[in-house]
Length: 411
Image (cartoon, rainbow, N blue to C red; front, side, top):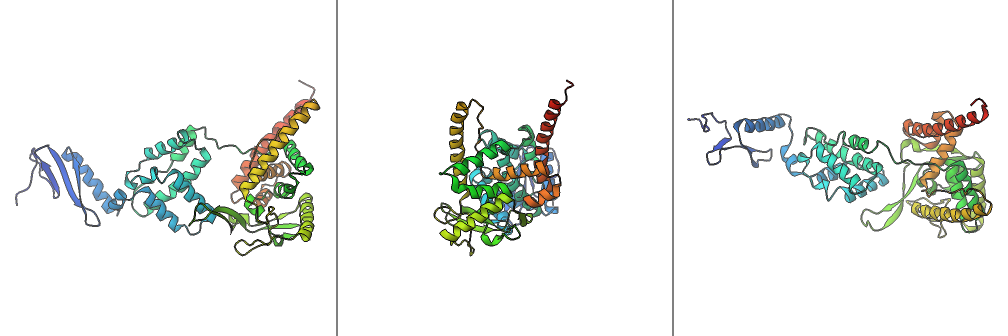
């Protein structure tokens, strides 16, 4: 059988073709599903490079069909379907982030066509054009990376294009997270004193004392029940969260759900400080007269902290209350300070998570055993504890040096 040749007399292999009309080369092959495809090149050398890539993919059992037709949304849907162990709150957050920032843009890209530079461009777009913070971008990266890693393990693609992209963007944006600043001791005292003396906000005093005296996450605090509290031994057992998030089937409606703490380390016992014991004792006596919580969430009831309707607190309602309290305090404090001819103690607006950060800061200022701090805070990774401790230690060192300069009469 006579061999086919190109215009230069070179013998063409099986599947290769040469078109005299435009001097182009082509190669016809079939994918694993039997569908025919054709690749084109301007030279025989380039065509055979493409053929070698195809052969290598076949030897590595990479499904080039899936890589060429499936989009990134397909990867996420496949990935999230396998994550049955995810906390309900985590899964809800992943779905929210994907649907709001990825699904209609980056999610429509073909898996096999996504390059490292595409990821960099997308991340830069989110920060520069959409105004996302570096913390939010980290969450997006946390979702995207395992999706593509699943594609690598399924032999759909050879390398994960997400690897290293977040780190590079983070370096370009100062390599810094948004700082969560704890309240100073002066601000903390001013906040609690103002609530204690306010007839409008005093009903928040027990919950805020509990938060500042235990360092609990907000979901742990609003979900605490009387049966989780041992008043005789003065121990608080943290064993679940109470979360408030959109339903899967009706995203416009929200509901309370009970879930496990954020990490396994979140299951812990916290000794009561005296102020926490006092507010819980007073709250128990009040509820003996007014009635205990009878609202059930996933089969449990007896929640300690409730709103005027007898329902557990929604964290967003707590944040709104904090904003009202801070604004009212600052307005009154400015007038009072002006009359007393002194600098006002201004409290910055903050979220309920800052109570936990403030507790951790006070704890670190008075405790040097990192493992004890980690145990009480419920940190799974001691590096989280170390970050807080290092931040507080820097402030303490500065304060110590300032006092040293005042006491040394040598400068």
